[in-house]
Structure formats: C-alpha cells, structure tokens
Amino acid sequence: MHWQRISLALAIACGSTVAIPQLSQPSQNTGAGTLRWSDASFPVENFQGYTSPFGYRRSPTGEPTTEFHNGLDFAAPQGSYIRNWWVGQVIEVSDHTACGTLVRIQSGAWEHVYCHMMGRVEQTPQGRAMVDRAGGIFILEGQRVPTGARIGRVGMTGRTTGPHLHWTLRYRGQLVNPAVVLQAMYGSQAQR
Ligand SMILES: [Zn+2]
Image 1 (cartoon, helix red, strand yellow):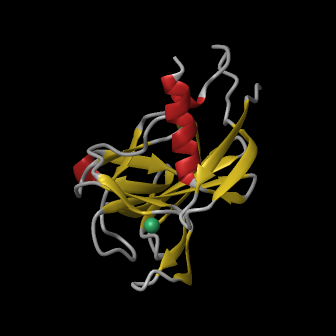
Image 2: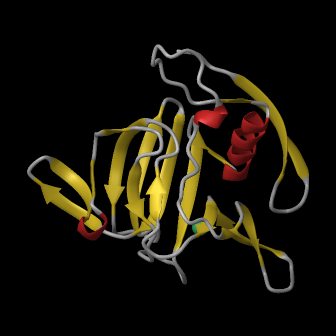
C-alpha cells in the first residue's frame, strides 16, 4: 500500500481559501506501482456543468443559510452513465432516502456516494442489488468495481428538481469537498 501525500489550497463555496494539507490519495496495491490522482475517473458522462457546490447554500439574497450541501452536483442529461471514481467495494445500495437510488463505494480510507440514480434496489438470488435493467446496470452490495466502470445512470430519484449526479466524498469519515479532489485530478494530469 502506497500513500501519496498532496497539499493544496482551494476556494470553497463561501469564497474564502483554506488549505487541506496532506490529503491522501486512495491507493490499491495492484503491483502496478504508484497510482496517481490522474488515474481516477471523472464520475459522469455527458457532463454539462456544476449546478450546486459543496457547503452552505446561499439564500436568494446571497446570505449563507443553514442548509449544508454535503456533495457536489453534476448536471447531465437523464440516462447519462455514472462512472466509478476509484476502484473499490460496494458497501451500500439504497433507494428510500432524499438521496434517491444510491450506490456507496469504499476505497481504502475513502468513501464515495452517487445519488439520484435511475433504477431501484432489489433482493436478488446473489443478494441486494441496485438494478437498472434499461441501462444494463446490476450492482451487488459487496462486489468490487473497477475505476471508471459504469455503475448507474443519472436520474431524478429522491429529492431533486432536475437530472443530476450528487456526489459525496468522505476521507476517514470526514466530508471532503469534491472540488478539491477534481482539482488534484486535473492538476496531476496537467503535470504529465
Ligand atoms: Zn446535491
């Protein structure tokens, strides 16, 4: 197991800049050597734009409110495929929260959650699964998923007003602004 340490600064939703020192990259012992942030997969196809940042939402008058948005929203047409950010294990599938149909994946100290998907949870002979037949998606709780694998499709399940992917990241149980991770992914790609 190799952990690459990265320091970076970021602009968060409120506009101030904070440093997140030593954010550790998820890593797997693949025998292929050191994995880099740039090995991660962008989580959605047909990306159209970020519609809601991580952090406290603003009221129409621009004042911060008490509603905390624990992820980043990616707008994409309904039915666009969602791709697994980093190789890991599916630790939960669900379809009865505000998050809608969701898949939660563990990659070392990281947890990544994909919300508002199409499809629903079914009890299958192999176990609990998120099933989206029209999209050809069958994700079993406990299964391993490679980086970049299609794990669902953008939908409107749960509390949402339009099709988008809500993506939540945690590192050792603590929420992380996904924008920081995307910055690290593109930063290391730029260095290649
Ligand atoms: Zn969201």
